[in-house]
Length: 176
Image (cartoon, rainbow, N blue to C red; front, side):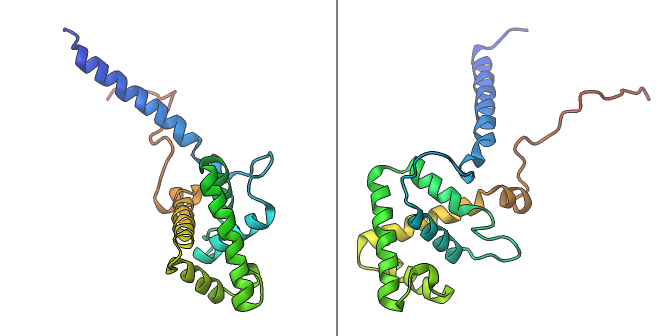
């Protein structure tokens, strides 16, 4: 039997891709965990991110943005994965959203009702201001991504397994 070099390289490449994919999936939930260190996003804006996530995906049957720690995911994502200009846009628009809530409803965004929060977010989505639109699109997209990739949703809704298949090391073999 002769060895085909192309087949060997192809097999090696697939094997390495699978091994690296397993490593990525094991660390996939890292953004859902609180992290230590100096925060880039101040505490009042972290609370606002939580309130926005809860507005977009409120809890139903124990499954909502806050129950799945999407707010933690969002803060870590924005701090660790977004460029400084996007971080500045997010912080500025979070401040602007809270100011708008105070102007329109005489209370902070967090104190507004679900309906009032939705009204404010829809206003940002339909705004003529590109910064407001971009802010809303980022928050909406990343909130949905965080929810759909949370461990509970992946495992219970999509039936995801990190490493499908099982290893049974000691199995009796019987002759029939």
